[in-house]
Image (cartoon, rainbow, N blue to C red):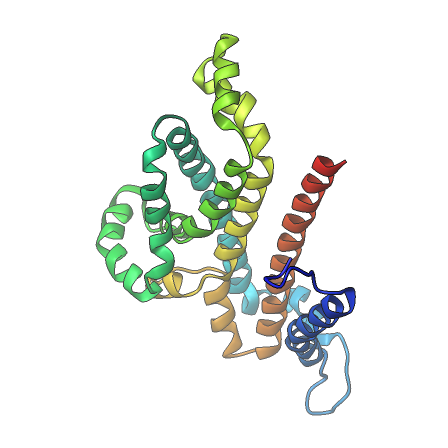
Length: 268
């Protein structure tokens, strides 16, 4: 319902969705068209797509595939950080320290207000210690990405927590003799599946699209590799950017479908 008390008609909804769809579709179609260009001779073919799998060009694209691998590893480690640290913290605060919820929310939202360049400058001395302890492998960037995804992961989990009576579930579990660990894993987390899925997929999307932190800390990920390969082969750079974009859209569609399925079960 809008402020006037009437919902937009189906025609208005269709027009709005069509305009938004066209805005998003134009750059994607342009990217696809660009990757199919044959070159100076004109026309279209699949040569630029098939060249990615050409064994003779493996050396040219080695850095690109290394960047893809590093980004996937970073995504997995970042999601693990969110699930292992953020989720139990939010549940604990909700159950035992509800007065700290606003403070926790404020802390989690701080990274979105800090420019990436400022964040990197602040993290640089910390990463001196990280390198001494864990080495300089690219996966250590997940410690920084774990901070970057906090605003998005927190909002996804918070909306799910608000829809679940966590206190009653915990009290019921404890009354039946379950330990706190069993209550968290066996009772609360199954009721937070939608929030966990959304937080995880959004974290993956943010990690796959991050460039500034990796570039300034001289680490190799998907985005830095795309920038490097674009200097010698713009077609392949656009292909991988297009694939990453499509992958992120698929993740968002999965989140949307999961939310719709949840609402459907509640209304049925």
